[in-house]
Image 1 (cartoon, rainbow, N blue to C red):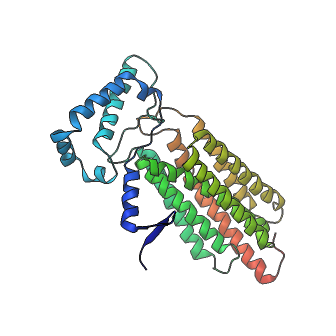
Image 2 (cartoon, one colour):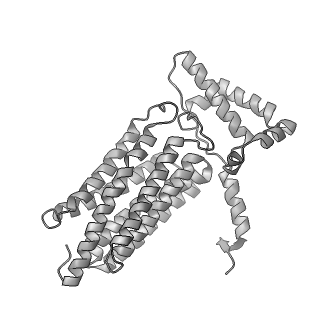
Image 3 (cartoon, rainbow, N blue to C red):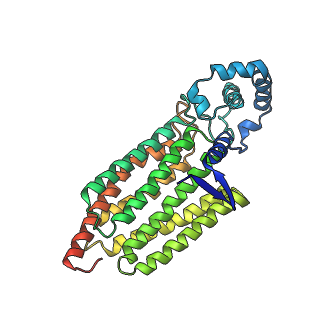
Length: 332
């Protein structure tokens, strides 16, 4: 079958789609901060672009640029911004002022093509932990378990989110930022659906189906607003905090109701409390230690062990459901 994507009634071949994606990957996100408002920074960038990003100088830059930098979309202009950012940081430090942010983020020391190396590594490790535990789940739990396919789907949604988180922290562009934000929201919404299936759907499949449709509509509306109306960071944070609270309270209610009948209930309760508690690390928001490790990276690093505990709960619960189904016992 030919690879064709339909966009608003127009047939677009796969190479055209790839071209559009590459163009989006080359567009960096723009968000004003104190550092990039500084005249010294702006003048430095203008002079650098004028001196290095036109004519023979540009050809020299392109020929000397490592292939991995070109493949990840680093341009001459981006390199000028990076060099001028550190010039401005040096002036701030020389005058004894606090290090400023640039374009909505702290200054990070670039490693190879990785814009935020610690966060990129932490995201990759989260994805690997998720993949490892998914494989263990599949090897331990028979496909006949009632939650098997729902948990597999949730794992794939999570893996997709960690993939885009790794890509975004490697190279912050218009496309990678959107994908990171949207996929993170998808994980939270699917966790709500997972909870709904576990608490209601096994006995009332129609209820979980209706909730699933509702969550799809919520996700579609959320993405449409941020894409076509306004990419509002405050709204996005408030929306994710709200659905995150629904997810937290629903799971905790289930844990409390089953604390006397399911010996592994505490694993689920601890996971949801840890995930929401560790997110508070984001509030620290300090300049990166050694220009690499910031609060966001610490948060991502702290969530790696949580995958092992969560999948331990999922394995225990899936085997319990399978056994109760075989025995004809009422599911809790």
